[in-house]
Image (cartoon, rainbow, N blue to C red; front, top):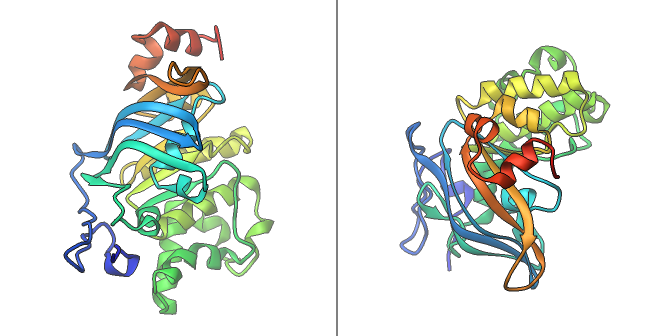
Length: 291
């Protein structure tokens, strides 16, 4: 069976290179749903880590996933770009659509999914390369070799990540010599250099000081005009500051297995979640009564 490949797909375009391939969709308008999950469950072997998640993620918004440790927030986030595929025992049940396409259809290439849906991790993870080579890595993998074109992409990506002015005179320096906050912004620049449609951020500020955290939050507010953003955070104040919508997860006993598993309790506008939640469990969490 042939598969969708990154060389077939223009940024945010449509892939059609044989009759049995699944098309990757065009970018949609601001009102459109980017992701839709239906009864999504994620397993590690026989253990169901999170169950029956139903979410609509919309274009141009920041969606925060909050909840206590062990409730499945990061597991759910990683399912949106198929990072869980890299864990041998992991599997997904239910439906997860990206712009109408089933992300787990066997004809969809997971590598292309990860190019469209970039990810920034909890701890900054720059490659042991120069600042320039970190940002140019994705475009080079995609086949861009022209030095002038790569330079333009690197500069534009560093500009978007609010880092250009700090590093423009030392692009050949090692990225590992940067501060933690700079490294995280570099990782954001590296992610957007591949022209993604979506940015997933798994606790991107948890290893940063308050000043660096504020810069990342300001950056997220700017980037949401061009990217749909999903963020996992333990910091409820951060979720309240930066997100448009918030999903609250908790862990409960799965009646099928009698094991504790993550469940989505409530999903709504962030202002509603923090001022007038519909579920008592949400209110108890955000007011500090548990978690």
